[in-house]
Length: 210
Image (cartoon, rainbow, N blue to C red; front, side):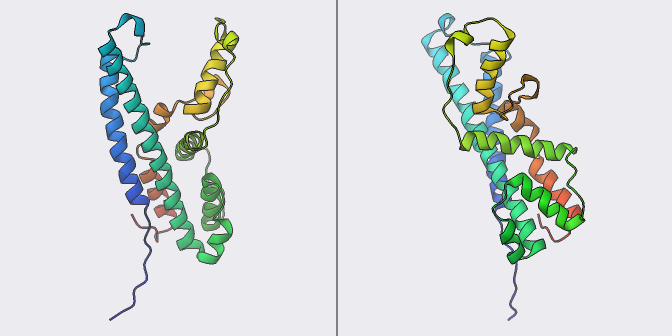
């Protein structure tokens, strides 16, 4: 009998859960588009009680599956990064960096392998950053104070403040309107981010397994 040492990580399992929830999100989104005629604003006063209930269930379903998928995608990415760091750096050196944030882990571990900075201009880096930002907003949710007087004003400033409130809860937490991304948008662009990062890291070091 031979003693065999191998790594076991949960990133593939987490990614599978994220994909399942994403597919549910996509299906519910189709229903949402149908009942809102392509995502138009819903007027509760002009619909029946039953129609409003269908809308609320559908909207809730989209939010639920989006949140589950987002959280598990980030769990998959962090687990993958942790395996990569553990395999490449060794347990002792990895422990020194274990408490770093996800984006810092990615850049630190990449530097250790390549001796150069992670290319932050790559779409991959931005997708991961957006995904992590949304996850952090969801997981570390804080109450917000809304100025109703400002919301009543029909001005650009009021519009930006309103969407800033929404973005601070369900987005990438950017104050500038042009840089804001809602969690739905971020999730849709992130479907293959785990695989893209895994393939990228495999190209750097062949010890990473799928």
